[in-house]
Length: 248
Ligand code: PEP
Ligand code: MN
Image (tube, rainbow, N blue to C red; front, side):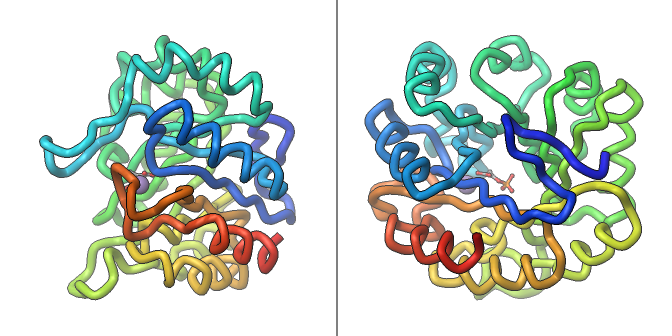
């Protein structure tokens, strides 16, 4: 705890990490294009959903095993570590060769069997806060990972559900300050899901840095309007360039 390493990047301990990539891995071409852009920019850790947990069962569920088949080769070419969401304990073995850090999504923070399974691994885990989870419940969820012997935990505040509807969620920056002052865990902020809107991502990311977060998790797409998931909140390359320049 205190600091957690993803690839060669240390999260926590005074630096500000920028993790970025598409909401979902959509095709070889899409993932390669955005990844090479991010690498050139100086981003050191990529994100990209392989299995997507969508509210609407008729929407894109991720490329799943199809992407796992070609990702090792593409990753070798790109040369950056990948954060990707695990949605089911049975995926550990399948994701192991392509994922450097597991993400537990907001819908799965309460999936204790999944947390127990990840507790047995020795890979870092980004544990997102459930969208109606108390800080207490979020911290108790870390104990499932710790009980298995995995202390490579990064907490991620991604916005909680409140009465507000103009923003997708309400970013709880007080929770970030609380985690920083009362626990040893590194904590990052996901302004993309918090805001649900690309024009709010930079101001929220700046606020995250100001409040003491150890980094941000940002959704980026070469052509946001064409994204198969979370199109409204994806930064385009220009937006990502501006964010990186301002925050790194
Ligand atoms: C995501 O990161 O694309 C995602 C689905 O996040 P969350 O679980 O926070 O909704
Ligand atoms: Mn998303």
